[in-house]
Length: 348
Image (cartoon, rainbow, N blue to C red; front, side):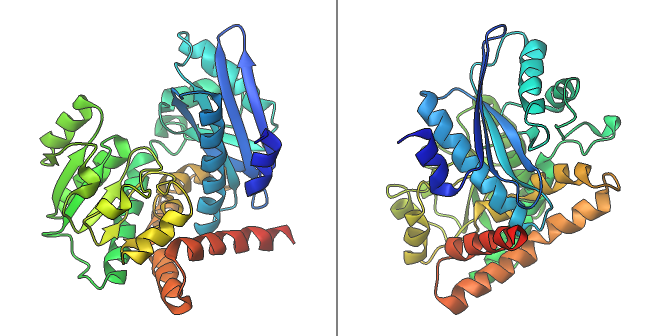
């Protein structure tokens, strides 16, 4: 498939390939939709198998960002950037090169944090472009977005428990958390504090040790999806729910912070066929986006407004679950239709 045909498949507006000879930076920026506002999305630094894998990832991620912003009721669109790792050895020069590329898009893309990025990196981008958010609290920004993502995941789990006909109670709940990065660890901490029994895994031994220190029981990362639990919470890389892993799930609910959890759209139907309640990732993990997007508000960043919007993830999922039941459609289908309807309405 050509780049144009891949863009057309999901309605992407723009894809830019970035190559900086001086630093060796290689990146791809994908703008999916600016119908609701500037395309907002994180910069992901990751070692990809090849350029096609990086392009596929950035296209899927940017599309999900559009749906995430729409379902959260935000005035921004969806975009994403991926940097083909390893990142240039000179971090400052590499970030400045990336910042110049972002600046060249004249505000159509607003960068923020994702895998491999920090507040310090956002500060480096801001040295060459105003089109980057997620600055530190000390710099007048919104700070680390991961606690807000974790809060949203917990709120979403409450809605999923309700949809599954379970008591909305975490004490005694069993949860398997795959991925113990900033978001996953935040979810683990919140679950443990509420009395849940948590199993956890990660490809990083250090991350596993950190989770174990918080009280989680560490299990094999390749088999955690098959753990017998009430809730499976994917909080690492995407595409982990597929034709192989879904039949092995031993849970009533899938609700986690990872992006693009379904390998393909048909996997939503596979979950539904098994009677598993699935909280669509672009709805449940919107907390971080809600947080950084608030920096774009004309009134400036407002903590209380962010807290309210993150808490609203629960009621949004309540609505989606109810609609899926009444219409006899999959949860993923209903959530995607909600997002597309909001985007299309703004384009009229």
